[in-house]
Amino acid sequence: MTGIDFFDMKQKEGLNVMLDGLVMGSLVANYPEFVESYGHDVANAKMARMFSRDWDRLKEKVWEITFPEYCSQQYAIAAIEDSKS
Image 1 (tube, one colour):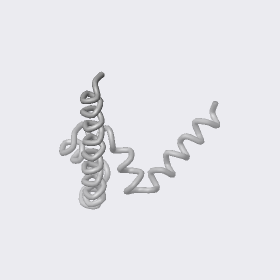
Image 2 (cartoon, rainbow, N blue to C red):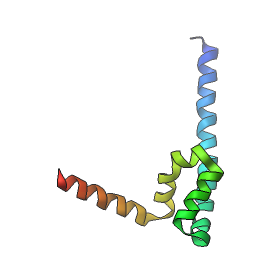
Image 3 (spheres, rainbow, N blue to C red):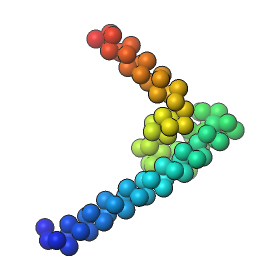
């Protein structure tokens, strides 16, 4: 690998991080309004239509940020599952 190839790879990684940040900002800004207007199920469907693969990849982070009770539910589910083992 030449220095130029490595530099290009680093640039692409940086660009991906920047784009992910912009997409995440848009998701976090829009999701609560969608939930308020349509409810969780319809909001999730609309976000999936608008953001496709990005929504699938980032939706749990969005839920954690916008609805802290989602984190609490996930921890409770994990604790129940752990206690069964």
